[in-house]
Amino acid sequence: MAATIEKIMNEALGLPPALRAFVAEKLIESLDEPGQPLSTKWQEEIRRRCAEIDNCSGPLRDADSVFKNAYASLT
Image (cartoon, rainbow, N blue to C red; front, side, top):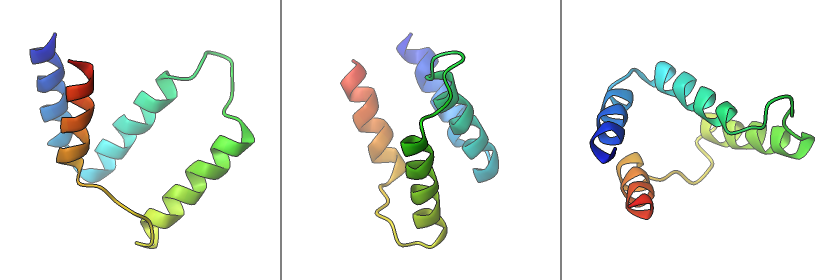
């Protein structure tokens, strides 16, 4: 399983930014319960974070370290 996850991550990280964003959005949506729309608070939080990224005003973390930490927490 770990090799499969690593392969998927490497392939996803090799995509152009717009496609990575699309994949990320779909993965996040898949975590929601079917038939349960996002709450207003989550929608506002998503918009706020997107605006911070667009305006280069929010804190960003290096993707490699984020994925490394996330992967380490799963194993």
